[in-house]
Amino acid sequence: MFKLIEQDLVDLDGPIADYWPEFGSQGKEMITVRQVLLHQAGLPRRGLLDQIFNLSNWDKLTENLANQKLEYLPGTKTTYHALNFGFILGEVICRVSGMPVDEYLQKEFLLPLRMVNTSLKTTEYDSNSYARLYSGTLGHQFVAWLFNSRNVRAAVIPAASLHSTARETAIFFQMLLNEGEYDGIRFLQPETVRLATSLGFEGFDEALRRTTRWGYGFYLGGDHTLNPDLPDGMGKGSTIDTFGHYGQRTSIAYADKSKGLVVIFLCNQFLSSYDYKNRLREISDAVWDAIED
Image (tube, rainbow, N blue to C red; front, side, top):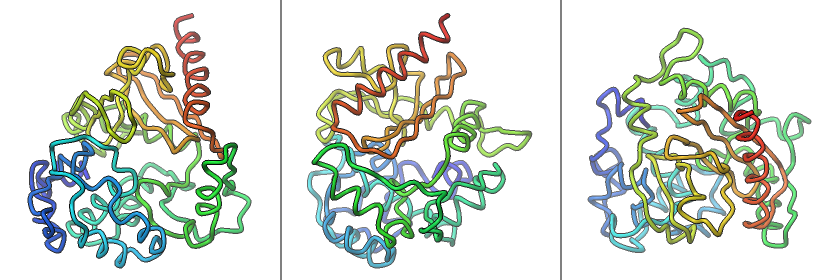
C-alpha cells in the first residue's frame, strides 16, 4: 500500500470508495485508508462467517465486504480488524495497480528481493516445504483445521496467508530497517518507511483488550510499559522504535530501529493467548539480553 501512496496513486486520507466505489455504501462512504491502517474503520468482524466460506473466491469475498454495514462510526474506536484489514487494503491495491494483490506483492517486492520461498498462497499443498498447523489449545482446533485445508492454503488472505521462511521474512524486515533499500535496490523512500513505522495511535484496542501502539499497519513495541501486568511479546527492550507484528498465536516478526535488530520467530503450533505471548516474551528477552552482553 505504501508503495502506491509514495507514487501518489493512493491518498493516505482518501476514502476507500475513491478507489473501490462499490465499498462506499451502508455508511462506509468516508472510511479512509488511514483509518483502515490504524484499525479504526468500523468493520473489525463484519461478514466473518461468510468470508470463511468464500476465502478461495476473492471477488465473492470483497463483494460481501462491500455490502456490509458498519459496526461503529469510523474513527471513534480502535479495534484490531484481523482479516478485514487485509481484504480492504488488498482490494484497493488490486483496483489501483490493475493486478491481484498477490501478483503485485511478487512483482514489486518478493521477486526483486529474491524471496523465492515466500507467497500469499501455495499451489503445492502436498509439498513437505509447507508446515501443517497444530493446536496446543482447545480454542484453536478449528482454526488449525481451517488453515490446513487445501482451499485455504490456495487462497489469498493478505492478513493471514503468507507462506515464508524465517530467513526470507528477515530479508523483508531488513529492507525496512534500511529505510527501504536492500542489496543495492531501493524499494521505498526513507520517508515512506518512517511514516509507515511511526506512531499513528496509542490507546485501548477493544479487540486486543489492552493498551496498544499502532503504526500504519505495524504493531509498535513497548507493551511492558503500557501493560506492565501482561507479557510483552517483543520483549523488555522494545520501545516505540520497535515495529512488526504478531502471527495468530504462533509467530512474530519485528525490527528495532535504535538497535539495528531484526527478530523472526516462526512456529506452527497455536497456543493460548497468554502462553503464546509468554513464550515470545522469553525468546525476545533472551535476544535483548544477548545484544546487551
